Image 1 (spheres, rainbow, N blue to C red):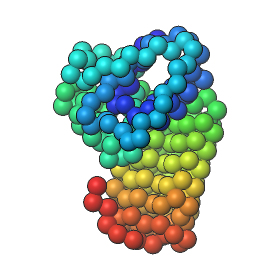
Image 2 (cartoon, helix red, strand yellow):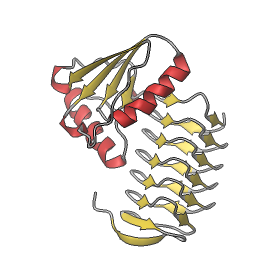
Image 3 (tube, rainbow, N blue to C red):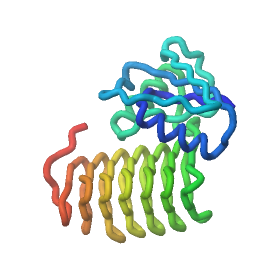
Length: 220
């Protein structure tokens, strides 16, 4: 099996490699395609996994093999930079990315999952949830019934998205945050760790607290 990881963030790659190993348990060749848009600070150590061979290739030297493409970074703004970079250099679009699901997650068959989605260990996706393309669902996240999660959204570990809630494109929900049923979070908005969202939060803001309040604009 050959995997191509676009962008190099070792912390992100580590948990995606774990999901690959737990899902397939087979010998894999991993080509990590790095470019200037994907530099990380700090650089976490990338551990070797038995049966997984890693090759690090610069974007300018990559021939653009479209087999099993995985996003190798996290954070909506960083993912968008990587996406735009590979769209420009290799014409890779959202539907070309591979969806990766950790086998310990629980996902309703009535849910709709886009392409390039990552669902981490212990996540629970209830019936009639819609996950748009390139969503990141981290470990221990719960998403309630009929929730709608926009593209490039990142749900950090342990957060809870209530039923019939809506999270706009390019937004981030912090670790352990709670979005109560039928609430909404706008596009390009950040909800801080541990926050409680009880009402609609608009586009392009940073909000946190219990209950969450708008602190400032998000200009990223």
